Every structure is written in structure tokens, then in C-alpha cells.
Figure 1: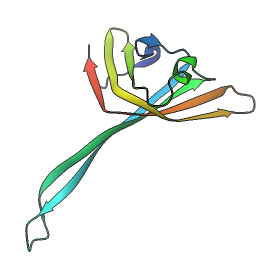
Figure 2: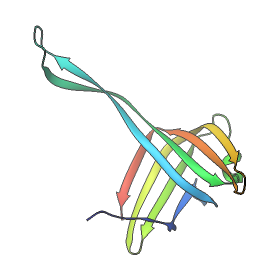
Figure 3: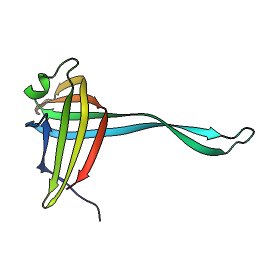
Length: 127
């Protein structure tokens, strides 16, 4: 049975402070891997793991003054507390840096800012 989290019960914190208007949180954890081959053979005999990084995006209605204040080389932490009823999971992004901010305003809609960040690691803890 899948675990389903409700966006309206969840929250996102930057350095422990709640961020208002968050519409989505997305991330990917990328691990570089290389194949190992034996001399004279075409089949893979092993795998070597290399560097890893985390890249994520926060989409916020209009803009986020809390995120807008984080500029340059300032590291921060993002904590997403995902909930649905009694089920809870905390997703923490450590040593984050903002790499990009985009903004769009659709006709008949509201403005939204997308903050792209990188992180040293992501931790998922069921609670």
C-alpha cells in the first residue's frame, strides 16, 4: 500500500522558519556510476560509484521574502514535513545553495517563483 501525503497538511521550512505559499517541492538525488569490465570481455563485472549531488526546486506563489534574502554563498537548510493524518515523513536538504530563481505570471492566474537549489545530501525519515 503506497504512502500518500497531503500538500495542505505538509509544510516547508527554511532554516527552521516556515515558508508561505509553497506550491511544490521536487528533487532528484543523482549518483554517478561507471561500469567495470574484465579485459577481453564484453560483460560488465562490477560497478563503481562516483560523486553524488542533490538538485531541487521549490515553487512558491508570487515570491518568498525568506528565500529572496538568501543570496550568494550563504548555505541554508530546507526541511519538508510531509503529512497525511497520522503518517509523517521529514525530508531534509543539508547545505543548500540557491542556483537560480525564475518567475512567471500567467494571464488570469497568479505569479509563481521557482527557486532552484543544490544540496550536499537529502535525508528522508519516517516519523
